[in-house]
Length: 329
Ligand code: FA5
Image (cartoon, rainbow, N blue to C red; front, side, top):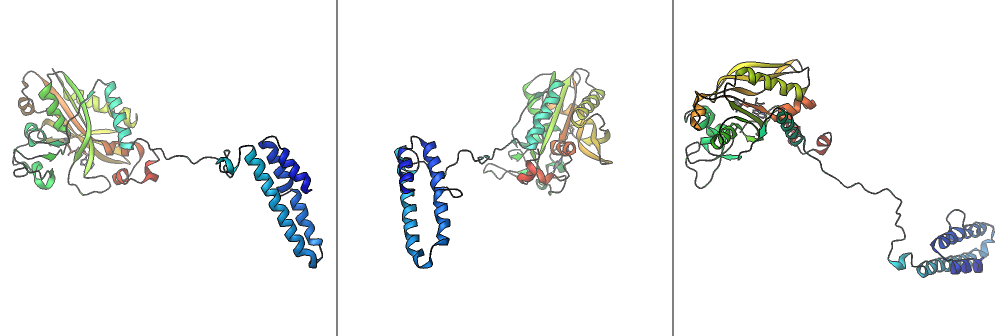
């Protein structure tokens, strides 16, 4: 058996032959060495020790012969390839990230509004009181400018929070309306999607940082009927044909008349945003003639839209960073 085994290892011409020989002699189940081991049980106990030693020596010899043939053929440990490496085992899937549900929502909203001819516009998140308040007809003593309701920046140049030279994280995307109108003449048809910040206590529907979709349409003879149609078409496209939408009279300093926009959700009306006809004072602030143009504007909460569409019941889930939640989108 020994000669047969050693000859076989020596004459093996390729890795397959070496492996075949290994299985034949050293195989854990049916190898010849196993048969010899089984015979040990029948040996007289007084001879068993000597027989065991011989068997071990034989096993080592076979193992050495096997390794020698492996390295002769350039395989095995001698070649630096881990002999336990198995190329057929399934691999470990790398963790690949994906787009956050709010970014997905933003892309979707831009696509829907784009089909209605609205182009995307952007503005900075750090704003001055002119764009966040003054040009939007929000006077100095208005409660919306209260330092307790805004994140004013503690910059070196900042004078008193809320006054002329101060800076703040924008509290609404309506700032972009002003920036667009300052730089372009009508007709204007834009949307702006971005982050806004308010020191609101987090609960199921509020977060201190959230996103708004601002819309602005300025032309000759734009009416409230146009506003309602655009918002209805938008809501049907994003939330489905069966969505119910309601306009409630409201007040914003930068629109007149103003409405609040509600969608029916689980049998309750939920506020999604505000809208209205651009106030003549806003047109004057950007140098437009209110006698010659009219327009509508709206600002909707992006998180609430995303939540309504996907049945998310707590806004905080969106920002928890919990992968079990995020992987669902
Ligand atoms: C405004 O911010 C106005 N600028 C909207 C507007 C634009 C009116 C243009 C007229 C013309 P309001 O403060 O109501 O309005 O906020 C709009 C929406 O933002 C809310 O309806 C709500 O959907 C969302 N929102 C407000 N606060 C939070 C918050 N803390 N967390 C999440 N969403 C919020």
